[in-house]
Length: 250
Image 1 (cartoon, rainbow, N blue to C red):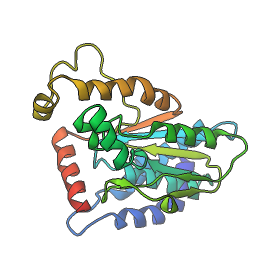
Image 2 (image 1 turned 135 degrees about the horizontal axis):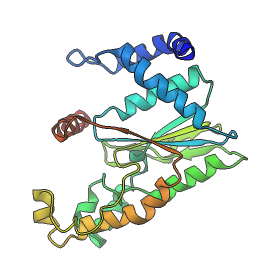
Image 3 (image 1 turned 120 degrees about the horizontal axis):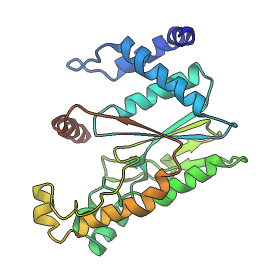
């Protein structure tokens, strides 16, 4: 507990500053100190202990839209860097979406719904696997990591990609479907909403997404050393937060 208190004293100012930067006049974070003390700091101690033999620790952070994945991952990086003196690189699975051109071709070949980014099958898995391989190597070379611009629904030009110049001690991959498992049995037979009922009558889209989870995504997620999940109180909140995020992009 003494270490927790020391950590809190050292990181509180920077954490509060970042949290306040994410607030608006209408929306404020409640119990900021409690968030830092009871959640962020304990998680950071847990993560730091998981890292062994100076190898890069791969941490997955999942949760629905608006649950705070970006905020939490940024606070984790802040504490791990400032108090534990670790090099942390965080990236979103969203930055690995296939290009718009690639999704257009996919939508024509497999199903029209695959033009819309988001579901498993619309990411470039090989790019992520290559990133994991490179940061795990003992000899590290600078890496260019993709960046996606949702406002134009396409991948940024390579000049604007992230530059990872030093081997990270911790790599955090955040995204709503990180660590997701495929459906089993006959669960895909029944459409879960009007979209699936009207546009995916033959189960082509949902079967393709599920098969991607079984194969490529499973291979990717198996490489994660740890997985954290942020759970929303109910699905209505996720819908509200998602609509708000999309509105902010316009």
